[in-house]
Amino acid sequence: MKKSMVLFLSLPMLISFTACSQEGDNISSSAPTPAAAAPQTFEVSDPETSSVDVPDNFVLVKGGNFQMGSPDTEAWRSEDETQHTVTVSDFYISAYELTQAEYESVMGSNPSSFSGGNLPVENISWLDAAAYCNARSESEGRTPVYTIDGQNVSWNRSADGYRLPTEAEWEYACRAGTQTPFNTENSPSADEVNYYGHYPYQIEENYFSQGNLETKPGQYRETTVEVGSFEPNPWGLYDMYGNVSEWVWDYYGPYSTEEQTDPTGPDSGVLRVYRGGGWNDFAKNMRSAYRATLDQEKGSFNIGLRLVLNAAAGAGSVSTAGTQNQTGTGGGKVLIAYFSWGGNTKGVAEEIERQTGADLFEITLVNPYSSDYNTVLEEAQRDQNEQARPKLAGQVENMEQYDTVLLGYPNWWASIPMPIASFLEEYDFSGKTILPFCSHGGGRFGQSLTAITKLAPDAVMGDALDIHYSGGSSLSSDVSAWLETNGIQTN
Image (cartoon, rainbow, N blue to C red):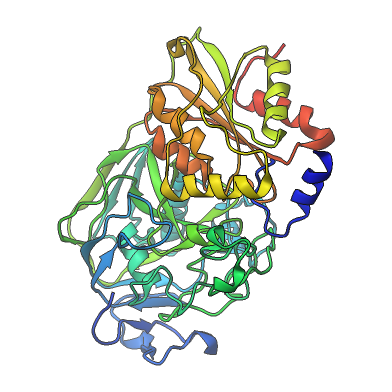
């Protein structure tokens, strides 16, 4: 068994088991951009004749209509990508993701996990991003767009300050007139985008027959890179895929199937949307239609922002209310529930049990996955591709007694294994706190946290813990620090 595991970990394509078309020109620029950014229809506007004061490196996106979301035939689409017709108005958008230097010059601090002035700022919450927009607007004599009152934020659509793009604006700009999964002729390679290059689009179905792939596996940099390091999309926008994901205005919620003009998303919610994928994401989670979510108070090492300005003053305001989920009433117990295939997640779960004395529950299947590596690849990949819900072999007795669930799993294909989805759908997690922990082979959480929040939207998501494979000598201290951060009592 030990030899087979060593062979498994040496595979270059490991899966972390152990552990629109518009008419006419649509863009113009407020200032010249690098030569590489200029598509055939790229026009440079004259700043002196512009009625809007626009900084260098902002691109004017001319409004139009497009099909937002993805068709049923798109590989690896999610159910929340219902395709519908949307019209957006003209707007200006930064050609680049916001850098750490830009953020620090306004806010006086830099929360990023990676350090470098020209690297994109990351590890900021949605509320941090909104606050930055206001602060920079004020520093430049613009009218701030947002009024922030705790969890509640309203948007003055007539203000000339900086803001986040709406989800529709972001996708429209990203697609740049395309309706394919990506705005490139083929799926992007690691030479074109900073992402988990070992996993290009549709690699999941082609581990052992890579001759069928349009794009072959490439480099995984495991870090952000300077903004603008790669070629821009057809409308002159850099890093719309990869490097860091980007916060958008909208709360997460189902799309309307009716035609919409300048939609702004739900009026309330807990989760905000971020788009585009980051340095540690698989290509499937960078698709133009893919929607990721996170609590508006939380940040991550792979989420940043891109600024937008109105091309013309809008009308009215949009008010949203942050509806924080309520936690348990206190006095409840803690449950450690985990699914493990190769043993790494089990080891983390047992270390948590040792430090907390909490109840331990292993998530097992009526029909377990094979212990053979090649076979389990096929079985687990089939389940994830079909979004199957394998039947669980046991149940948690009296789940009502638990206020907090520490939920463990291996990062499989940048998401949760389907047994975790079965578990989350089997119980009512309203008001409970979920603290995820995962074992991984380099991709950290991938998009597993998004998957959990979508399946348990009425639960409170605490800080998560990622462990590289079995965790090594630092496992005990890493677990201890995580438990302390989340206020979990230890022995």
